[in-house]
Amino acid sequence: MAGHDSILTFAKSRYLWIALALTGASLAAYLWHDPGGLPNGGTWLGYTLGTIGALLIVWLMLFGVRKRKYLDSAGTLRGWLSAHVYLGTSLILIVLLHAGFQVGWNLHTFAFVLMLIVIFSGFFGLYAYLRYPTLMTRNRESATRDAMLEEVADIDQNALALADGIDPKIHAVVLRSIQNTKLGGGVWSQLRARDGSDIAITSLIAAMEERRKRGTDAGGQTATIFAMVDFLASNANDKQTEALRKLIDMITRKKGLASKVARDMQYQAVMEIWLYFHVPISFALLAALIGHIVSSFFYW
Image (cartoon, rainbow, N blue to C red; front, side):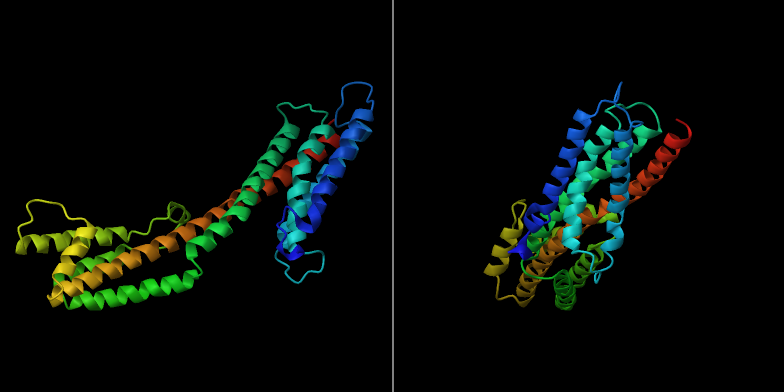
């Protein structure tokens, strides 16, 4: 069904065929054209291909306007994005044909390089758009981010209440764990996907190990979290030990949730951060394009 098409196969890959037809016609005209010397942007074909390329660049930049007009009747957003990908890619060959494959250290080549940067950053955006939503869905396991954050907050409250009835030291450890759990923040924090809640488990296990050594002969062994669970299970008659077992289960559950939320934010950050590079370079390309056109008409 058309509703399940990706942006690459939208409307039976309509814009792929349009882009292929456009580049094919441009290449055929380039091979047929006899400029009477080296091909360059100053011939009638060079001007024609340059005009097509310039109009394509301006039209591609209008996508940013189109995607904010959700009720616009000028084609579907998915169709615009599909055209954006394929026609944007076709620019590489069209512009090279426009210039007759001549490059040098000048404004014209600078505009071409900016165009390549925009296009290849767009390729990364396409990769992120196709890959990361699936990873986000798999990571969330049918839960929303808000639901996971609410559960983390509930665990924090319950853990504090439980720790309050065990021991002041354990309460302090849990409180510190809540303070160390930092989800979100700046772009770099989101990309690192670290939440800080692992400090809580490490501190709690250390505190429990210290308490165990005071009451038993540990023999200098370092207990893992699994050993702690076994120890707690074997001492279930002790109310304080039972409470500690529940507490570590809570914090372990919280760690899993916090890691999922941090990873979800990481995926979203990767999906969005490329735009902070793609969009400004696009405007720089537009400025360079204007400079290229002006210099071509007035200084050549």
